[in-house]
Length: 335
Ligand code: NAD
Ligand code: MG
Image 1 (cartoon, helix red, strand yellow):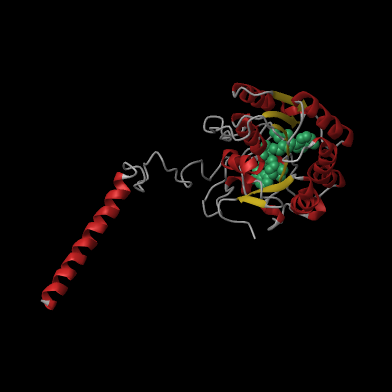
Image 2 (spheres, helix red, strand yellow; image 1 turned 120 degrees about the vertical axis):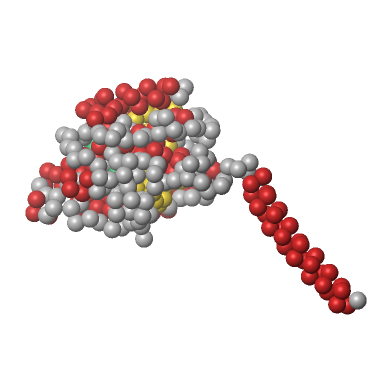
């Protein structure tokens, strides 16, 4: 009896094991209606390896500041792909360098999430800026174009005043504009070029933030675009890398200062991203061909792949995150 019972129990457990396995397989297929099968042609999953163009890229050079529309391939800023869900409804954002690259991706995403958006850019970038203004309007939001050079303190003050008056306030500030000039030797860096790098990447965020702060209510978010260069500087970006390290310190210090005022300060740290910055003197041509090829994902990132980080950092739902740096570098480059 005892033997029979234990046999029966063994059989029952074996049977149960088999049916558990069936349930497990059955539920994974039935519950998802065959969506998450791991197949590479699955329309629900996007394989990051194949999602965007890979090296080798074509050699190309444009005069500074360059136009996204003239790059080959043209960067993907999320024009066709970004879908909003009201995460920033009623918010008012100022984005520097909002005409192209990472700033344009943030501008498109913010507008589709319900924010009114002002963008700043250099007058030479009017062509790119016009496209962004049209995209913001297509999303049903107010678009404000404020061209001008942020290496001037006076212009930075005017930029903030114009943004605040035309948007009717301000609660998201994205200090994203940047200048990057590759030089193989420190001996090749002119005072003029060094100064442009420091003024654009360090002074301008300081001037703009100082002018904006009196207008930012509690709940506002300040976001800086830093870089992997802050942590692992390339030999050819001696001056630029120092400014990106300064941007990290800007985030960490200002977050401590403004936390008690209810204003959050965070940073985004991109790795190699396919933008005009890289094709107008920011990168050596032989490095451009292989751009991002040494990352685990084997390619450069596209601006669209960073947009959701900018949204998350501005969104009320991220309310406990401040003083943080969020990376998007294809798998490498961060501490
Ligand atoms: P981008 O060329 O599209 O954007 C840079 C923008 O900076 C320009 O569009 C321009 O409008 C603005 N700008 C430059 N000088 C200016 C000035 N004097 N006055 C006003 N505006 C000025 O390139 P991007 O790569 O999208 O750059 C955005 C930010 O991303 C920069 O801060 C850059 O340092 C950072 N970043 C880029 C990469 C990358 O691989 N592309 C990697 C890490 C960090
Ligand atoms: Mg540009």
